[in-house]
View 1 (cartoon, one colour):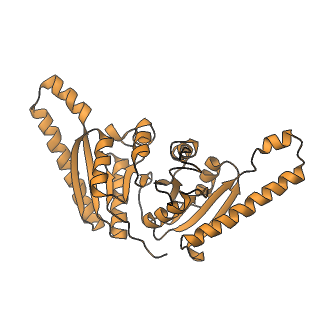
View 2 (cartoon, rainbow, N blue to C red):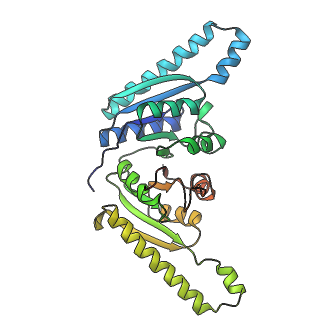
Length: 300
């Protein structure tokens, strides 16, 4: 596959925890791989600083020490990434509400990708698996990469979950930008609509099986059409069309196919079906082992 350069810079947020360092390392690898500019952001929590001022008074030496220490750690991490990954890293230090500062910096950079660790400390602890992440992902219009694994090289195999909504084609495009050398496993989980009710209503098994075959044929045709429209060559991808619940089947095939990246669209069939904030993404983030890339754009 021909590498595709992201449309803009990469922003990685760090709290200096081990998972956040893995995320920063992945961001640096991607910057090196794609030629994108990289900014590394650390945010001192504004609420905690305000409490400190209430206890010790404004302008206390401890507050300046905290600011200086954060800057020192940030510059040290940036220097380590520059030396090890041979990329230029722009350190950005801020204080305030973490999500506001991440969003503000992403907007200022016109970032093509925001990179976060799946776990963290301090302000990042619940950034991905909690109410904080939901607020971030509701507001952002930018792809978000949640890093769970220690990076050892470029992504090799990416499972791209598709439901053929307006978000699906852009999910493929985003996957190609973030994982330009990976083989794509295009995944769709289909189900016979209201199968239990059909059984209960006395619809015979042969008719239900016919519906099942039609659903699979339809998914197969739409998958190949989407791949062709996305410019994928036969050697770039393989289809994975299965029956069952998407949440469980994504995890099974992520593990079975040895994928190191799972790509999800932010929304499902309609804008009200927010995949990232629903059961599918929560299950993938809670039970899966791969990094997770959330595509936030749709076809016009």
